Amino acid sequence: MIVKTRIYRLKPDETMTQVLDDWCNYRRYCWNHALALWQDLYMAHNIFDKVVATTFIPKQNKKTKKWHMTYQDHHLNPSPNWRLVRDLMVEQKEEWQYAYSARTLQLAVQDLGKAWQNFFNKAQPDWGKPKFCSKKNSRQGFKTDRAKIKNGLLWLEMPKETPYKDHWTGIKLSEKPLSDKIGVVSIFKVNRKYYASVPYKLEKTLPKAKTGKGTGIDINVGHFNYQDGQCLVLPQSLRKLYAKIKFYQKCLAKKRTINGIIKGTQSNKYLRTKAKLQACYERVSNIQHDLMHKFTTKMVNDYDQIVIESLNVKGMLMSHVASKGMHRSMFGLFKQLLAYKCKWYDKELILANKLYPSTQRCAVCGMVKKGNEKITLRGNHKYGTKHNEYVCHNPNCPNYGQVVDRDENAMKNLTLLISHPELNKAL
Ligand SMILES: [Zn+2]
Image 1 (cartoon, rainbow, N blue to C red):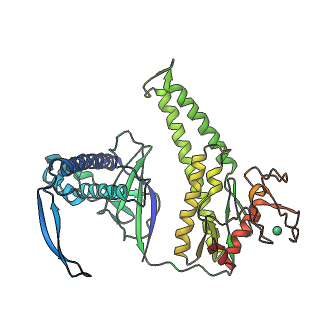
Image 2 (cartoon, rainbow, N blue to C red; image 1 turned 90 degrees about the horizontal axis):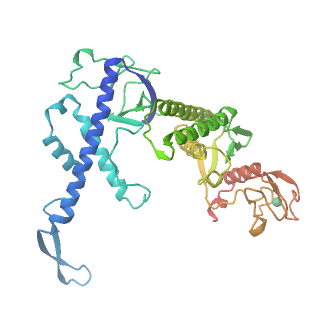
Image 3 (cartoon, rainbow, N blue to C red; image 1 turned 90 degrees about the vertical axis):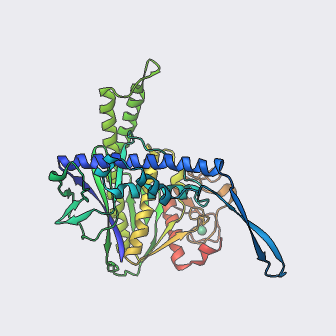
């Protein structure tokens, strides 16, 4: 069994739109209440009831066979966990809350538990503390594990005491669903549009036919190089959108202050420009997804082994691309898509060591450039190499003094890892 997740645009009717909005709000209410309660419980745990009892337990040392006393502290207030918080919240439930699915509350508290766990996990130092949700956030949503797919429609579980009882309908999906065996559906709302992310439980797909070929993929700002060509990832349409986004951002920044005073951002002009900006963001994301899906599918179709860099240094260094944050997000998306597609179709994904000198190494003789011979984003100062060139200065190399494409060279170095895996480990 594998899980495949699809995201659909939802087309709810008037009643169901109201229901979706209500549930988004209710989820936010649950989350915020649970978070406040959780924080109170922590306070109580840490400050008021320190240690109420200490039990002494005799223990024998395994080596010396000597007995000694150990002790255990007992807290009156246990440290909060999601079950405790959920139980307290269910106890305090008010009349109006019965109009909503009890699962919304449960799943919200469970998510909060995970958020705290991530926050305390030392292996993930970047996770922040769980935050309160605001209704001003551009993205709202909730999860449900009781949704069903019937006759191609998505049906939410109807709570017993809902005012919409007579008008409860299934919600149309933008595409035909794959099957009716689904997991926890998460529904979200962005820019007044509704989406559902539906995980399907499917039988394992058949592996793609083997082609006997492998490739390295060198990731660059405007193009991805692979064995038999390159994929342009910054088409004219994206460039235009980036320019537009820059323009709208400037407009908004100007409108935010009037005569140097920060004004409310609710004027009609401001909101109109904001809507245009958000539409641009959406189109960028759609174009990027489309590009990356097509490219990764082509890769798993054409090659058995694929080598990519585990850390995208070039992507992080780029500075001359407009809206680099958005463009950077594309690299993450690329890796994510490639990783799961390789897994689905039984293809091998090889991650090059982050210290593997794919840019500095000569793909023909294997010499690695060092010190002031190194190639930077601007080329090499000592030899006057241009930013997109690679020149080998090893006199014994058959390619001595010849100008080759920098990205092509890097791609060949990556491809080499398929036949010479020891190069990846030597570092
Ligand atoms: Zn060489």
